[in-house]
Image (cartoon, rainbow, N blue to C red; front, side):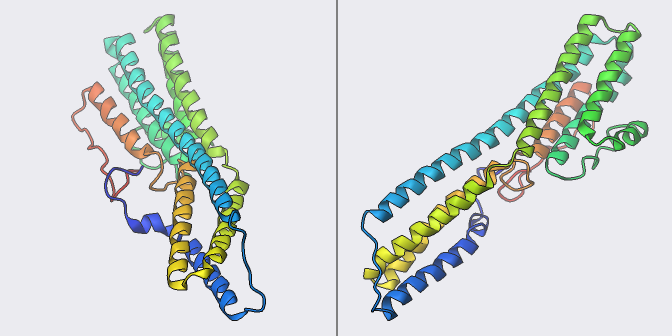
Length: 297
C-alpha cells in the first residue's frame, strides 16, 4: 500500500516508459511525413481531436473508479478480518473456563497463522512461509496436504471448538457465537479470493491503449503546423499524463499482486498478531511493519 511519503518518480514512470518511446517515435514519424512528403499532406478536422480527448477522459475516469472500487473492497475485507480475529480471541477468553488457557493460546496462534497464510496465498506466494512457529508440527504436517491452507487452519479451530463443546467446557450458545465468528472469517476469505480470481477485462485496457494512441496521433497531426520543438513535447506530456493515469488504475485493479499499490495484507496480519499476543498477555510482542521506501506491504 502506497503511503503518504514522497513517491519515487521512477515508480510512477516505469509503467509508461514503453508508451513514452512509442509516442515519441510516432510523433517523429508524423512530423517527418509532414515535412518531407509534401505532395500528400495530411490534416485532421479541428473537432476530432477534442472529441477523442473527451471520450478517453471519460473512459479513464470509469476505469480509475472501478479499479479503486476493487482496491477499497479488498481493504474493507481485511478490515473485517482484523475485527473478527480480535473478536475470536476475546470470545475464547470469555466463554472458555480458566483451565483452557492452553487451548485458547493454540487457537489464537492458529488465527495469527491464518492471517499470514491468507495474505501469502492471495499474493501467489507460499502460504506456509513463517507459520511453523505459530502452529505445532502435527498441525503443520496436516495442513500441508490441503490445497487451501488458510481454510484448513479455520477448520482446525472450528473442530477444536466442537471438541471443547463435546467435553462440556462451553455451552451450545457460546459454541454458536464462536462458530459465527469463524463463519464470518470464512466469508471474508471467500470475498478476497473472489477479487483475486476475477480478472479485470483485459480488452478494456487494450482498447483504451489503442484509443490513446489514436488520439495522440491525431493531436500530433493537428500540431504539425507549429514547430516540432513545441508540438512534440506537448504531445509527449499529454500522452504521458494519460498513460500515467491508466497505469495507476491498472495497479489498483488487482490489490493482491505483491506490488507497492497492493492492500497491505502483511502489515495488517502483523497488526493482528500484535493485538492477539497482547490479549494473551504475552511478553514477546513483534514491532509493527514499517514502510519500505514509499509503500507498506
